[in-house]
Structure formats: C-alpha cells, structure tokens
Length: 353
Ligand code: NAD
Image (cartoon, rainbow, N blue to C red; front, top):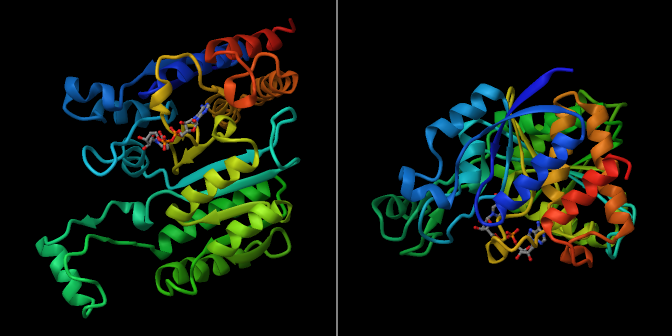
C-alpha cells in the first residue's frame, strides 16, 4: 500500500478541532497518509502579516492534495477570504458538494441524493469591487449612462465562455463517472442576458457531447430554490456559476439536515482541496462542540480521489452507523457528544467494537 503525502490546513475558529478529529479517523480507516501541516487564517495574521503565506500554497502545489479546515473572513473590512484566495491562486475551478441523506439525521426530507457543482473562480466572487466615490466607480457610473446611482459601490460579475465550459464539462464528466442521469444548469439568464446567458449557451453546447448518456435541462435560480424545497427528488447534478452555487449549496445542506454533515471538494486540473461546506463557526471555538462529520465526509471524498476506495467506504459506513445509532453524535444531530467523542465512536466502529 502506498503512502500519500497530504497538506493539512487546520484553519481557525472551530477548524483545528474538527481537523484533528478528521485526521484521526482517516488514519484509522487504513489509508496511509503522511500529513504536512500548513498554516492559514486569522490566527496567523500577526505572525506572517498575511492570512495565507506563500509556503502554504507551495505545500499544496507540491503535494497536489490538501485537507482544509474552515477559515474566518472578516465582514466588510479586513483581509479578503482566504478560502476564495486558495481556490483562485491554485485555479481550483470546480467545487463539488454532494448532498446525501444519512439515516438517523432529523430532516424534513428523506432519501436526498443531490450533487452541487459550483464554479469557483468567476462571477461576483472574482473580487473585482470598487468603493463609492473612487475614480474607478465614477468611471463605471459614467459608462453605465447613469443606470447606476451616484456614489454607489460596484461589484463586477465576470463570466467567461472558457470558465463556463470547463465547469459544465466537469459536471457532465462527474455524472458519467458516477452513473448520474441528469445535469441541470441554473442561472438568472432572463435578467443577466450576457453573463448568465453566456453560461446557459455554453452549457447547451457542452451538453450536446453527452446526448444519449446524460440528460440536460435549465432552470432559473429563483424557481430552482422553490423546486428544491418542494420537489428535490426531481434533481440529480446541479451546475451553477459561483454565487448561485454558494447559496444553493447551503440550501441543499439544509435538505439533508444541516451544515454539520455537508462535505465539499475543490478541483483544478492537477490539485484538489477538500473542505466542509460550513464555515469556522467561531462562537463554538475551543468548546469541543461542533460536528466533525462534514470535514470527515470531505475526507471520504479525498480518500476516493487518492484511489483509497476501500478505506473511503469503510469510513463512510462507520460515520453512517454512528449517525444512525444516534448515541454519540453532536448537538446539531440531537446528541450531547463532543467533536472528539464522535470521532472516537467512528474509530471504534471501524475497529468493529
Ligand atoms: P458557519 O458555517 O461558520 O456557521 C453558521 C452556523 O452553522 C454556526 O453558528 C452553527 O450553528 C452551524 N454550524 C456550522 N458548522 C457546524 C458544525 N460543523 N457543526 C455544528 N453546527 C455547525 O457560517 P458563518 O457563521 O456564516 O461563518 C463563520 C465564518 O466562517 C465567517 O468568517 C465566514 O466567512 C467563514 N466561512 C468559511 C468557509 C470556509 O472556510 N470554506 C465557508 C463558509 C464561511
């Protein structure tokens, strides 16, 4: 069995607690991992003068695979999102978020098995923003022929054909590889005719190559929100530009019982970074309280990616069994166990105890 070298970024807030537990359960799954710890986040600002030191990016580039805890982004002021910066710097253009119901989780829905594929590098998330009354925002207001009110702050929404093509292709390839039947592209192309319109036009073009293998359809984002709440079973793989993908991911996490169990992965051509959908939940920092499942299931995706399918299956089954039993689960799943205790129960399950 080969050893895999993986960069691990504990993050900040509750990140270090769930990362430590996740590393332990991954080690107990039988896969051989050599961890290389790298730092990022609010806690290292003072030490390095940046929340994302170059050597952290170098470590991910070198190893090609990283497991990442959540990282806090200050609202309004302070540094820009480190999570977004990692995705952009490493060109991790696709974000995969499977949303699957585990028996034992209290939720209004049963049997959900959806996959959200979110574009990661473009859209309003590109970070092209202008503060009010700057030379740039004034020029854009002028260019808009006064469609934009004076003194406005402005965010730019770039969507490219190339960016749209590679994310839609990723969604279709994922569907083929995992035996999925349908890809639904989601935008607001009736209003944003050029940007979202380009996404739909490109998606249609890409879909042609998969005719007969995977079905293709389009939905508008507002309608999609209602449909997902009323009839989530009609959908299979969803592919969306960045911002809609972000919002729909949380909606889908809600369908399966909350953020505590929603895993994620970011893929580029050669690099993959695995992280939970949720954030750093800073109010619970250091309390051994939050659910480690989302990051553990991101670890399951990582093991699959590394070709450790037996270890991945073993770990996922152990997580499912602990959730189904409901005795050693965290508060969000109706239990009283801590982060560590839930991890220990998962490990005990893998050892057959
Ligand atoms: P959050 O996901 O951190 O937490 C929202 C709430 O969801 C929490 O208060 C908690 O009640 C619940 N929750 C989240 N994770 C949980 C878990 N593992 N177990 C149990 N309950 C859980 O969202 P937020 O409060 O909006 O964001 C906090 C910080 O995290 C912000 O700075 C945000 O920018 C950042 N963030 C980071 C990432 C990332 O690292 N990829 C993603 C989203 C948000």
